[in-house]
Image (tube, rainbow, N blue to C red; front, side, top):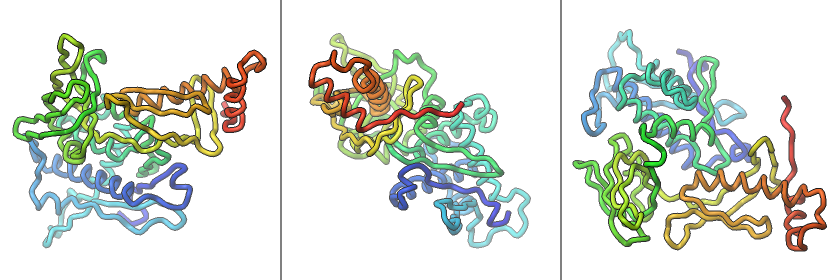
Length: 355
């Protein structure tokens, strides 16, 4: 495959348009891309994941991610999977470079939310869950102003917030929504042999034992900090507090970075914020609710997860735009409410998308 035919990965969105990309974003994207290539290569070689994914050095060399020079005038980075063994075979009908195309295909299927097509492409459920987990690592956190585009064979897939939600739906265990919850606490211990973690839960000051799915071990290793979010099936005590979580499907560090929104869409309405709406994110006193506050916009919100907070924020902004900013008779409002309406009209404008 010629250099100009390699698949490409690019950082896209408003953050990239500003002329620079955070090196940590590039590091995360390329690391996850490399792990996906290694997973697909190991699966091709028949490596069986028993408990932990620890392929031998020869496999890592055979399926090494390489990045070409960026395309002129863009953030697009060509990439391939190449055999970097000290003495690679001279003739190999099963060239590992094809794995790069497989990575792009798996990303496209996973981001589309088509679980059946993804299962057909990657029949092994253990490999499939680990691949989707790596795709989630590549996708931007909620409220970020960037995305990841991967292009190959004339097709393109973009990992953005909607794609993240579809990925989470694909990787989530098949349990009733009412039996799952997300709690926040301090990660105090990890037992990899028993696939368990212990979480200190602030509302009760007790430790909760959580049994996790094997494919999220990389998430646990990356989340060894003071506070983490843990999502799984739960057992409650008589007071309605969680005492145990099983089938933990997600462990992530608490993300208190500001939410920055340029465009807000909800219920058929699209608003553009100028300048972008920037809100500081905090935790409440129980450490279980993410909160944002902006009294000038009549926004005081709290939700259990950052994703839920963003959805509630978008709904609230559109509601306030209609109630305060677009009210037919603003004189019916109190002076304070009229000031809120004036702030919305100054900060936002509504746009219509072509049909």
